[in-house]
Image (cartoon, rainbow, N blue to C red; front, side, top):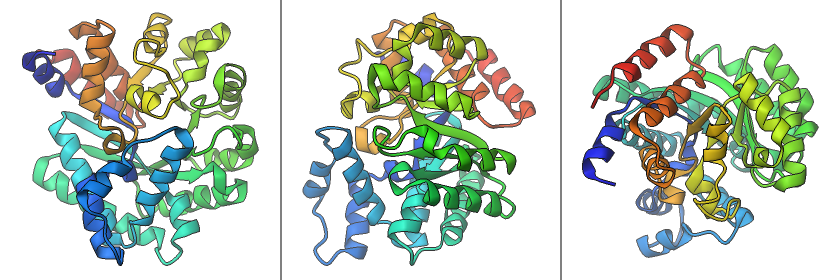
Length: 343
């Protein structure tokens, strides 16, 4: 890709709506965290070697290791500031970011989620003052592997803390989808909806061509508003039509899907098929430093790999804003910026 085109994509106003805060920790920052908390800190070479995955379970184990090095509110402030600075440099005007509350509550009980939120909110306000954005919403992330009860605790806490931190906009679950089907979590999702929280879920990522579409259908029946990954929809013609007709956003993460082994290659990723069917797809980086990617990089990858023109890329940017949980007024403001953008 030419620098001119990449520069055009960088300036294109866009939102990133599938992004894990903990997945933005760079090897260099991991060394800093390790020096703070480990008796024998990682060298930079050792830290970099961790960012390579054999399969999805291996990826989850490394994600857990990164979480284990976030031991204080100051650690969260450090990575939140770095994340927002990086998003600003990519031309991201708004982001909706998962924070793994489930892991905090289960594995680091000495940390209070409220203190973590104070820290990341302080970082958000600082970056907004210094750089003017991006705007940030937070999504409370529960881990399937920790069970239904633990998920309920995370979702109830999100409803409670939202009164103090209005930027907590919604809830979601990630983790091992194969052994923890979405329907087990029907009750926590119902209660979260009743509390006014927005609903997301990682679903149809790792569950294959048979179970995967059924899991996406279950999520839709539970009123999940955005489908994280949604790779398995490609195996169900009727489901793709439903997603297109209802314009349910599908949060696409191309590089993530390939490096976790969920998709064999860029060439066979279902994004082009989804777009052709009229599905509302967005481009995201998921865990960018863990996969060596970025939101901007995913725009460049999609444009080059699938021969998408500038107007089609503007369409994906509009999708990202429409799929966000921003107010209608703010969406219109940002979509007007996309429409008027010429580079």
